Image (cartoon, rainbow, N blue to C red; front, side, top):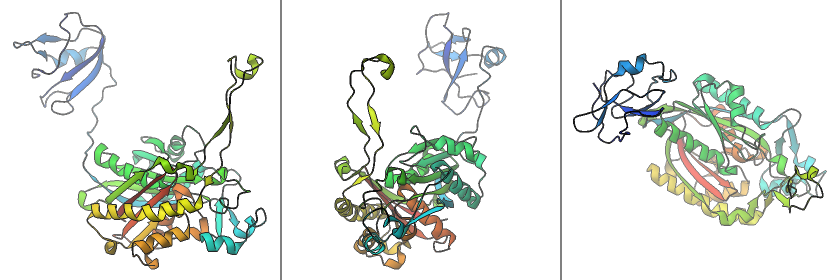
Length: 421
């Protein structure tokens, strides 16, 4: 009962070797059918029951022979097809910060600085840093649990976990550990690395998995511990950074409920020299014996822990020039203007940057979300951390339109226009 397959070229030999065989069926009564004109792959250990049709096309002539044969893998299961083309709605937020607080006065004990000098130049008064048994994974899990609770989504119903971080506990990625500890047993999990732009990229990536992949619930986490990579003798950088995590839950919704209204992203590798944390290595040397190099002719490179290097003036110029451009482009895609925005939420890097960007966009300070004074620059965590606090304090209400923008190392920068709830 299967239709001819004119586009499928199968071997003409009567004795087909074991392997993967493609079957396509247009009959709605076929138990192997996924969708009209789909190809289904299954494993066979015998010559499949094909015969040549009148036009020379190969046709599948008996499903029962396949179903009754023990050679067909029992792993083939019919699963519901994902529905693509959906919108994505922001339904939950959460955040977590380490217990230990480092004040400006604390930093004045180890570098030549003081509270006034730091506050005037950055707007930062305190920052949190990991201590004890705290890790990026533990902060990510805590913030995620809060977001899932707000969203009323069970961990087992999460389809995808995106961990936006440049400082994972595991060099190979920490997202699967977050997925495991949360109990998201059915979720794919992987890391996204884009420094301070990471969370905005993760948010848009999540929406694409919902729209194009048919995912239902996606957890996006921004978590970083830049305190691990700070040179605590450099007063130009050690005053800026802190550790934190924040999370959002996106859920499939109708197009009318779509929370992502527009976005725009850019990258420019030429600016990497202004902000980076490159791993330093020493050239390999000839080993006197194999013991020090696992028997290799040359010893492996010796790595050193990287520390953050930043040209503050250049980064400031870059942010003030480029961030308003991507926000304007995202607004244009959304069919909106600055006047339609309820809130502006920028990566919390420096209060001077926040002030300069909002001034260029002609957005009043009262509409700018900032918690920089309490946490410093928490990289990929800064936007979800600030948004979660704004939502829980009822500053941001359902239906509010927020322009978010991340910018930083790479250089990368981007913006998304979102509607909360």
